[in-house]
Length: 388
Ligand code: PMP
Ligand code: GLN
Image (spheres, rainbow, N blue to C red):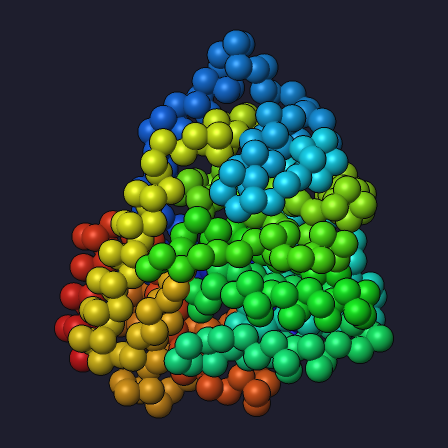
């Protein structure tokens, strides 16, 4: 894995979407819903731009973001998860979680340091580590249940370690870290003075009654952990790019120091609308969760019928499937052929790993998105079955 090259190539998501469009393939690669988010939220965004009673929301907001969004994030985290945050100092709006991740890593991942994470990971972790001049070191999450090997992660902490990057619920495995797993990592981070960044963008997309534990709900996390989240997944508006960083005033202030020179501040109009949604989701979170869970089951069943071995996730947008029963070729080649010859685009998990021997088992896995209309999933499954 060439982290420097990965920082300049178009991402695996963009390349897959471009390949899908060129081949006329159904795109189960990049994770975005093919519906538009709730109408009332879309109308709130339009009002926020044009209705002076709600705005004006078209000029620079404060560097930390619109106060109404910071207050809504704080009250939502308190109501839903019992996490108390001071909206004045402990919440900062960002341009999507992506900017929150970049600003947090650039604040804490010192050049030449080690950044520890699990793999597969969300692609920007590897690339921002490279841009920061730090080295990503990983522990694989393995099939069938993709539980984190916390003891191995903790054993890798040394005086060179600057950060631990967590992602729960996890993309692409769907693993929801338990309070106990998070507690062990927080204890180790405190002991070694390491900063944790926890990416929680799938916080609302959890299935089968599994409970999401935010990092800031863990005892002792407040001194060492920064959480990153966003509205994209929670409200099915991935293009809005409204994210936020939360944590202690001291840690958030350090992230603010970097963010101010990445974007200075992020667009207020969608922030205002997201604040309305966080204050009252009008049942959308539960509705979306149920629809996604049904999509997960439908896709997993169809992939199994097409001869693959799917692993149904606890959360998120994706099913991982093992391709060993249908081919002995690497997943990256399988995915190229799948888009071109079968007309279904998916992501090889190997694009989200360091490609070391330790993660060789992950090379047989392909990621399929189920955050799509039933008719889209059905057409993809028809094509997959026909190709057997
Ligand atoms: N983290 C994870 C784990 C993701 O899957 C994504 C993609 N939505 C992001 C961060 C980026 O989120 P945003 O679109 O809000 O920048
Ligand atoms: N989060 C989405 C995914 O994992 C897409 C993000 C992106 O395209 N950068 O597919």
